[in-house]
Length: 187
Image (cartoon, rainbow, N blue to C red; front, side):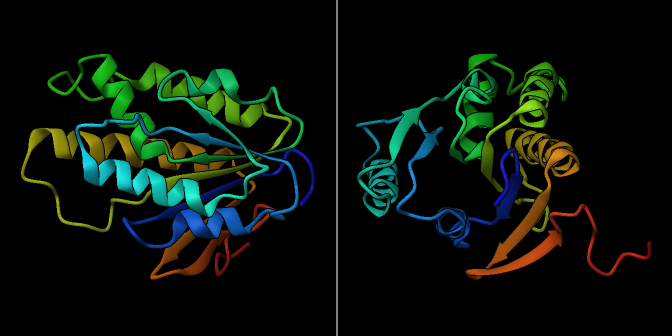
C-alpha cells in the first residue's frame, strides 16, 4: 500500500477484524502495533484475550501500549502502524473523564483530536474499531452512551480514511475503496 494510506477496519466482537487488519500488512515488515487495552491482572478473561492477540503478532513487530492520548503516537512513525482497537481506547477515555453519566459529546474534543491526528498522519495506518450499530439498543445508559460515541467516532474516521472495510464472520466487505469511492453508490 502507498504511504499515508489510512484503512479503517470495522467489525463486531470476534468477527475477525483484528486478524484481518494484521493480514493487511506484510508480516515481514517492521510494524508498530498500538494496543489500546489496559492490562488487568484481576480479570483472567481479559488477560487471556490480550494474550491471544500478543501470540498472534510476529516477534519483530514493536508493540506500544497506549490507553489514552492515542493521538500523540500517531504521525511520528514513517512505517506501518496498526491500532487495535478504538473501542477500548474510547472506554478508557470515558473512564478517565468520569463521563459515563455525563451528557453525550463530553469526550468529543478527544475524538476530534484523534480524528485530526489520523487525517494528518503521514504513516500507513490500519485502525481497528468495533461496529456496534447493528445490535440492539442497550438497556443501560452506559451501553447506549458507548454505542452512540463509538458510532460517531467511526463515522468521523470513515470520512478521513482512504479505505473502510467491515468484517463479518471473518469475511471482509469493502465499504469505501482506496480511491474514495463507495461501491454501489451512484457517482
